[in-house]
Amino acid sequence: MKPQVIIIGRPNVGKSTLFNRLVGKKLALVDDQPGVTRDRRMGDAELANLQFTIVDTAGWEDEDPDTLPGRMRAQTEVSLEGADVALFVVDARNGLTPLDEEIGRWLRSQSVPVVLVANKAEGKQGEAGIFEAYSLGFGEPVPLSAEHGEGVADLFDALYPIIGEKADAVRDGKKSAGEEDGEDTLLGPLKLAIVGRPNAGKSTLINRLLGEDRLLTGPEAGITRDSIAIDWQWTDPRSGERRDVRLIDTAGMRKKAKVVEKLERLSVADARRAVDFAEVVVLLLDATQGLEHQDLKIAAMALEEGRALIVAINKWDVAENASYLFNGIKAALDDGLAQVRGLPVLAVSARTGKGLDTIIGAAFEIRESWSKRVPTAALNRWFDDALEANPPPAPKGKRIKLRYITQVGTRPPRFVVFGTRLDALPTSYERYLVNGIRDSLGFDAVPVRVTLKSSK
Ligand code: GDP
Ligand code: GDP
Image (cartoon, rainbow, N blue to C red; front, side):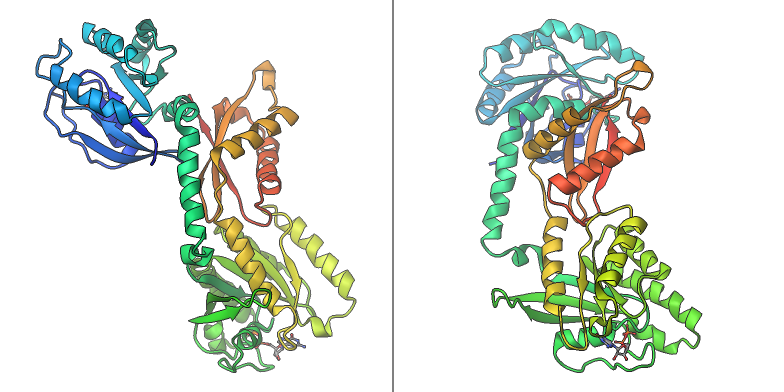
């Protein structure tokens, strides 16, 4: 079960607004009038990648705002039993009331951990209230504006030490249960696009992979049919396992083009459409032509779109100076594509069939890291080490504080780093973090996105 977080506070402090904010939907009715009756609500909440169940106690209060209502007490006591933490919400704007103090006393008699939240803390008007809230005896209040969405990073900070482990365990436990069915069941057929300049050998490669002459090939550039998606099953030669692949071929439009320049342009347009559809993009190069500007352009576009990328050098059967060629292409890719390092580069021949299974095998593998989630605890262990090994600079003597990191998405992997004075963080330091994520957490060759967010 996900960890449960219960919101407690007197009427009108913004409990429903906070509930809505955390659930991300307009589920609850928000009203200016205190005591508007609402049913008890539970929702699935997400704060960065911390997932929990949120319980709103708004509406359990009686009409009289100055006494702790018996109804609330009874209801809340029942709910507190299942809760991992209580968010005790007070109003920073209007200050503390006797009822806040009474709720505080009562909460202290319960065994649930309490996080004090000073809501409506946006702007100057909130400042005094934040200070006042210390007097409730729950330590430093988390200043928040539920209405404006400010301070949620601090809320994460406060909640993570209490429920992070449980949340991670639930999420990772779920994942491994799914993995028993095979990862393909989770991820579906591998969506693969093979892109490259005209004549690189895309159609030949696709025909060879499918094991039948379904597409026309010839010495003339671009004699293929219109773009199509082809579903087929690839047999993994290592395990004998059959795995679903959906292949896109968008080369079709090229046959209408007459001149070479137009062909070149069309191959980028084709690639763009293929990339839109794909999880993994295979950029096919021609060993007799080497790496050209156009190839880099297509590769960069695929990475910008957040796709996982594999480079395959085709026509290896007729390659000259093979190792020189191979190393040269690898170096040019590293130079030309700052977004990734260690792209898989494979030497293949669509004509002889050499290396074709390797392409598909590598594509399945890279899709896995592209779809991977790193548990927050492991991520922050790495983060702490990285900061210790190379602390962020202190421009003009003022420290830049990086507080924590969280993975907010996959496919491609996306991370948010929270901290203060982030405007002053040099891009070289950002790159240091991106490279570290990629190298230390198993995201080689995958475009990794990192955003900085101010936690103040
Ligand atoms: P509840 O009775 O505790 O559930 O409180 P509500 O969520 O219904 O909010 C009461 C009032 O406070 C509403 O008018 C909200 O718009 C307002 N409110 C909630 N959060 C904030 C905030 O962060 N800042 C300000 N200024 N007003 C807020
Ligand atoms: P596309 O325009 O990228 O679809 O390229 P095609 O599949 O039509 O191939 C263009 C030309 O390259 C054809 O003459 C193919 O026979 C040839 N070709 C494709 N793959 C190979 C290969 O691995 N080795 C050699 N030597 N020629 C190849």
